[in-house]
Image (cartoon, rainbow, N blue to C red; front, side, top):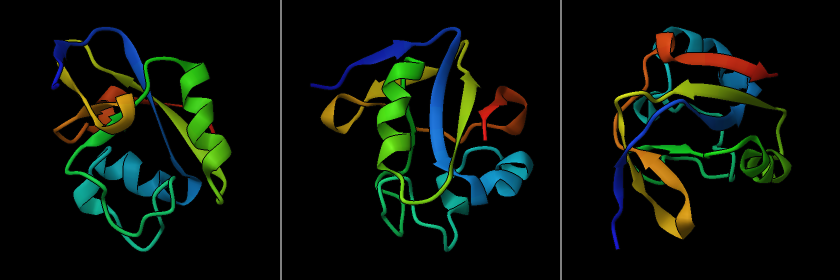
Length: 106
């Protein structure tokens, strides 16, 4: 069942540290995915969306999974609509501009 809700506050995204400069320039945008694999090891976007976690504890699952050094980004989601994604994760079906992002851990 698809769940769509208006988000507020901050949610979290993990990605390879190698992506930091691209994210600072383009934001979180699966269309910008280059040669660096995703946090789960995929070489191409799993969905046309940005995967988000609702808590710092939840994002630790992804950073432990990564085979590469990982950054954690806080995403300001006020006014955006997030959807339920595969396996219970939340997704945002639109790119996130850099001004909505804050590097938390890198």
